[in-house]
Length: 171
Image (cartoon, rainbow, N blue to C red):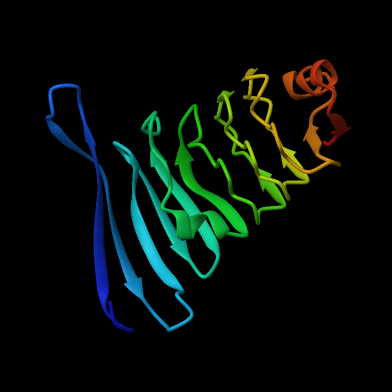
């Protein structure tokens, strides 16, 4: 791929019978020799992502694919933004080692197993009242001083206390 060229990559899955299924297709644009990409694709039937200059933006309606994994170059993102995002779940951000904080949008109800595993620099997460389920290992391997922010008396506070995480109430 040359500077200024688009690229397309597709991730395939094979079932036990050898049938091929396209899990996701990525359209990217190679913008300079430092391997900066403008990248976009689907992470759910009606959920999309766009990655530009270190920021990952998620938008759409519905659930993410259960086995979706972002392309490796996106895992270096520094900021995750939810824009017009209407889903009860979030995709897994496993191994996103550069993010330091994230704010989960209202309407998300659950944080699944290993959602933020090995996000070694993740220092804080803001959780809305709508979150009522967080798997025990959702934040395994996060930063040492990891803090959960949420409303006093919320499920976020209960989860933090039950799992040994610091909690700070916010209004």
